[in-house]
Amino acid sequence: MPAATMAVMPVIEARELTKVFRRPDKSEGLRGSLRHLVTRRYTTTSAVDHVSLSIEPGEAVAYVGPNGAGKSTTVKLLSGILVPTSGEVVVGGIVPHRDRIANARQVGVLFGQRTQLWWDLPVRESLALLRDMYGIGPADYRAQLARFDEVLELGELLPVTARKLSLGQRMRADLAAALLHRPGIVYLDEPTIGLDIAVKDRVRDFLRRLVADGTTLILTTHDLGDIEDVCRRIAIIDGGRIIYDGGLDGVKDTFARERCMHVRLTTDVDPQSVAALLPDAEVTPGGSPGEFTIRFDRFVLTAGQVIATASSLAEIDDLLIDEPAIEDVVRKVYSGELELEPAEDGVGAGVGA
Amino acid sequence: MTTTRPIATARMYRRCLGAHLRAALEYEADFWILVVASIMMQATGVIFLGAVFARIPTLAGWTLAEVVLIYSLVVIAEGVGSLCFEGTWYLPWMVNQGDLDYTLVRPYPVVLQTMSGAVGLNGVGNLLTGGLLMAWSLSRVDVDWSPLRIALAVALFLSAVLIKLSVTLASTSACFWVFGASFMLPTALHQVGELAKYPVSVYSAGIRVALTVVIPFAFVSFYPAAAVLGHGQDSWVGLLTPLVAGYCVVVAGAVFRRGLRRYESSGN
Image 1 (tube, chains in turn purple, cyan):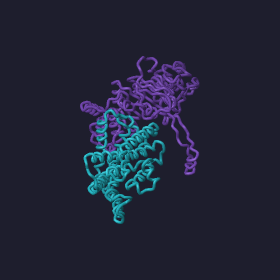
Image 2 (image 1 turned 135 degrees about the vertical axis):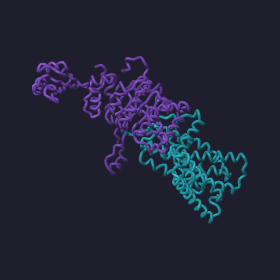
Image 3 (image 1 turned 180 degrees about the vertical axis):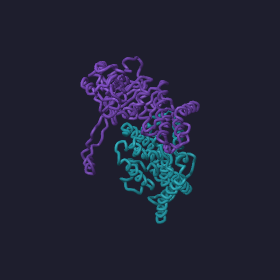
Image 4 (image 1 turned 90 degrees about the vertical axis):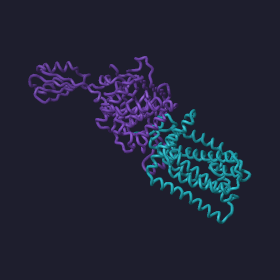
């Protein structure tokens, strides 16, 4: 939901957040390195470019974009790991990179690509160290372990040394480590990467419960299933800029322009004649005579026009319109196919459009 | 950085270290190799000292027993560094790999998480060697061990260890500014620190000044030893060791914090 429509104070507020990285501009080989010693040229890139986000308590936001779009950098800025080049970030009333200790108590962070478990120690020891760092009492600790055992089957992993865990096991243990201190705000960066279906389902189920319990969640993922299962709001970032921020349905309405209609006519009709009547649509013959699949841009043709055209040829026996999938949109975002207009005023563009 | 609850902070440090110690002790062969190797390395220097003193009675006015005290202070400082603060040496590697990420989102000072991040079992060998050398030296030097002098020795020697640790931290923190070469700098400085195993009065004025003012390695061993032994008319300089230690800790902490603001993590 866009922040403007609600009176609740946002728990995460980023304004014009920008992170510029400076990389030495070296040409190839030794000669290039030597030249760099003398001339010192750098290229700067804005990994995150004037990003504004306003997230309310209890919201679950999917944060998506192609590789290198600035997803992880945003998460690192919000969690205080990186100091922004410019712009402001306030999380739970705290500026995360200034007051890291206070921030650490209210947030839980997971980077799916790397573990926070102590590599040479059994999982149990890692969790005990975190327990002591956060000052979690023995009763609460036991309750948390029981909860993690129930949803993540953590018990069997406790005696295992971190380096001996499989990827899926490691992710379950890492989730427990990130959430041990019951953080109200959780950042998960690719929490299901490389997991098999069964583990993925379990993790998603766990995330749904987390959100149901009122946790504020920012979820960075490549997995479309994660998004639809857990989140109702989605922010899309590309080239360091937010290009969409709003409801999942809004993404469909705004960007899923293609509709797909399956029609079965009572009599056999030549696909060519259908195509001739609908020059703007793509008509492919179906499995049996009289069946067609018609794809059209809903901004060019309406479903009514397509139905009217089809029924002018023969009586319609059956009709099915594919639900436009958020997945198609996000997949196109990732593959760079989607031509997105820049979000209007940054936040909330496209909602209800 | 929390300074409100120093005892809880120290206890947490011990917990982190203890976990790594248990992990390190799982490799029994490694333990013995590291201990024996470190004893051999330190013994080499002692053998050399013995050979030198077989030909000359004193070195710049220092007897063998007095020089061994100086020597042992450096060995002990290195031992404490390896055993309890070995993680400091891994800082450049962690910064390079982006491994500080999680430490920045835990409610415990990043610098302490880093320093407690590893255990160097070679420190056991150093502490054994250094302890034996110090015991041998103190049993032979001519000092009146009043309670006050004992307290002074403890205070000065602890400060000396702090100086050594601070120099290591400040030098490894260079990795926040320069990348590749930063692995070399702490090792080079450590090597310079070996000069402090001998009375700095044997060196030329330039080196003496460098070891006193620029990088105060002389306060790790020479000056505190001189103060405890009451050796020479400049022995009062050693009383400044705690002040120098305080200065070094503050500077090293500031360098680390400034560096941390530049931390860039790493891409995936």
